[in-house]
Length: 165
View 1 (tube, rainbow, N blue to C red):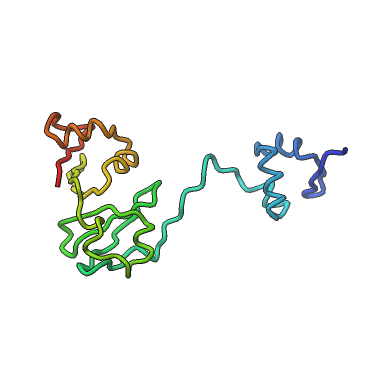
View 2: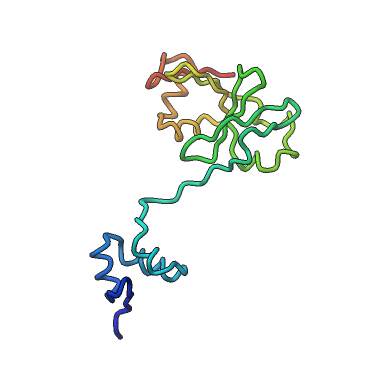
């Protein structure tokens, strides 16, 4: 069985040869062609490392949520978590995006408005946190140490302070 080839700018080579020339893995080239990419895009678009990041749903930013009309302020990087703030900007909450995509179903009795912990970062910004474990994963903090901080057994963890709500 002959190796499959690609022709670009008058040059015909096998996938393996194109992979060596473009520094894009052979399996990536094959996958791109199978996905219907043009030959030019297949060979010229750089490969990205790792999984794709979820795009920010820009339609959620600025949205007013719930009876208290909390405002969706921003999306945390590398997660599907959004920051909600009160109108006066004094209180903040972290809410997973799937809960925001149907805002009509959100009510005050939902846990998203009742933070279980208040966390203050090294930059002195305080946010209410519903799920401390998820917050620690996002911020690359040790969950068990943050629990000790919340219980008063330790002052800080990497400059972060935490207390129970």
